[in-house]
Amino acid sequence: MKELYESMMLNSKLRPFIPAVKVLAAHMVGIEEHFPDFALQLELVETEDEMWFQIMQQPFLDFAFLDEHDNAWCPSSETFKAFAEKHGPLKLGLDIYPLEKRMNFYRWVISLCEWEQVEHQSFSFLDD
Image (cartoon, rainbow, N blue to C red):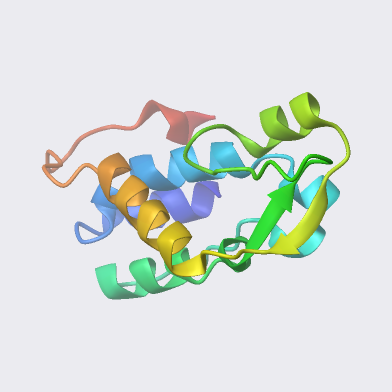
């Protein structure tokens, strides 16, 4: 992930996405332990369109991660790890409202981006 952050920092078109990717990555922690095929997959890209495309094509967006009472994990509400710890064994189901989920996810990611980035702003998490 560090290589991705560094590449994004050097590209003014992608710099606004850094906070969003950081939060998204934090919210996805633990999903790979339960559902390896749904780990966050982000590649180095050059344009804002490419970044949006790969964010919105994440495989987890097509599925519902459910507890035994069919409560679904919402990426914008809590981390996957917190949901899994709180709700015990999880199962995978098809999302019955995929368009609504994608739109909510899209709005959430937009809200996390910093569109008014200062040209040479530093991000301390790159040092991690």
